[in-house]
Amino acid sequence: MSHTITNPGGLADPVPYGYSHVARTPGGLVFVAGQWAADPGGHLIEGDFAAQVRQSFANLKIALAAEGLDFGSVVRLGTYIVDHNEEKLTVLGTRIDEIWGDRPPTQTLLGVAKLALPGMLFEVDAVAVQNNA
Image 1 (cartoon, rainbow, N blue to C red):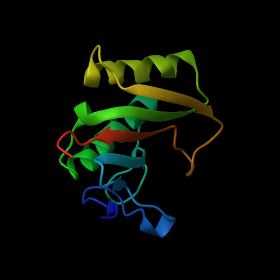
Image 2 (spheres, one colour):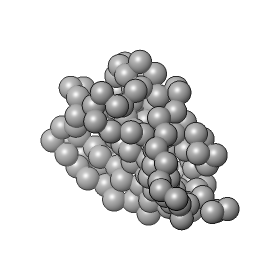
Image 3 (cartoon, rainbow, N blue to C red):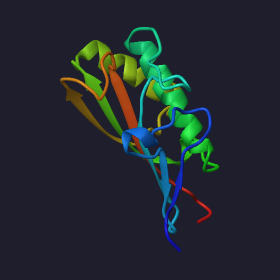
C-alpha cells in the first residue's frame, strides 16, 4: 500500500503552488506541510504576529482532523519565524503551552529572513503518529 495525500476542505488549495497539505504513510506517520495564517481562500489574514500564530495552528488542527488526528498526535513541529526575537518566541511558547501544556512535541525553530509570500510572519509544519496504525 502506498501513501495517501489529502487536501482538506477549509484550507486553501495548495496544488497550484506545487504541494499538498497532508501525506499519510502505511505505517501511520502523518506529515503536515507548512501551515500559515491563510483563510480558506488562500489570503493572508489581517493581524499581528500573534494572530498569525493562532491562525496557523488553527489550520494545522484542520489538517490533522482530516486524518482523524488532533494535537495530541503530533510528535514533531517545525516552526519558522520571520525576524525572530524573544518577544515572538514568547508568543509562540504561550500558544504551544495552551495546546500541549507540559508535554509539547519536539520542535525545531528556525528564524528566517522571509517566507513564501509577502506579509507571512510565521509557519508551522508537523509530523504526527496515528496510534491505531
